[in-house]
Amino acid sequence: EAGVTQSPTHLIKTRGQQATLRCSPISGHTSVYWYQQALGLGLQFLLWYDEGEERNRGNFPPRFSGRQFPNYSSELNVNALELEDSALYLCASSYDHFYGYTFGSGTRLTVV
Amino acid sequence: GENVEQHPSTLSVQEGDSAVIKCTYSDSASNYFPWYKQELGKGPQLIIDIRSNVGEKKDQRIAVTLNKTAKHFSLHITETQPEDSAVYFCAAQAGTALIFGKGTTLSVSS
Image (cartoon, rainbow over all chains, first blue to last red; front, side):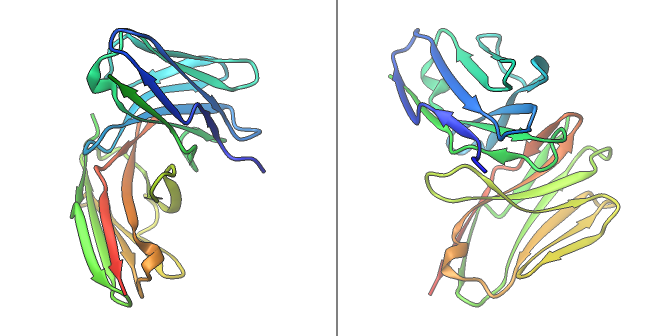
């Protein structure tokens, strides 16, 4: 069974640009969660999508947004990039809300 | 909202020793507490979890204990091996999301 896949693995952007990160959940999982892992801050909850709808979001500004497609894959968009947005962005999927989260390997976003 | 504190931030042990990582949470409504292991260059991997109706759960060398009254839970690793070296995260369910601790870097030296 394929795990959660994220692309790209690495992304380098200039301050002020937009970044798009992608996630494909495990087959059969309808929920996708996005987390930001910045150095020293652990995993910060960003967004939860389920059945194509945004169900919950963490304490992040509106320039962090995303969507979930009919095949349950998801996209995270970060607009007007700032240097402090540099982090590892992790996607997780689950079959039953937050039980049994399975994480992907992440996208390393670097803003210069 | 939910807040999860994790200690220690770093832990160094000799191979064969036991390691204990402790977490506290603030929301008494939380009822699901997973632990994740993250190796370099990989995403976190679920290693064990516990629900609030259980006080202890064990899986081979790994065990988790939960004290709901005190709002703390702990990860116990016995007979540590070099391959246990990684960053460990605790988490607590808060509504419809998991809130994570800041992580513990475990180093096991042989």
